[in-house]
Image (cartoon, rainbow, N blue to C red):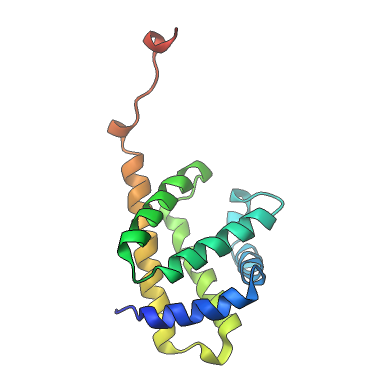
Length: 150
């Protein structure tokens, strides 16, 4: 599956005009269809919605710049360790993102755009999952011992 970066950037420009209304819809959709993930998020979603919106804009505006995108996705994957995000939860996010994009893009949403977003999301989630797995390898973790106590 090829990723048409121009279509992703085009849809991103449309989403940018809508602001956090997009991420609010995304979370409402996700919590309605996948209530089991609600506990991973804070009660007040205002800051989370803003962060997701900023992340979407950064990712979509750099979808064709791997030198910017890959380090960011790596960092994002490692950061999600502290929230106890599991690999099996990434498809939930992807499905909800696609449903949200389709909702807001309306007639501009096409088969090619959907396939490009699927490809881009699968690539991004793979980088995040692999970065988290690498960061959690036992040889990366050095527990403190009594010898470390001053």
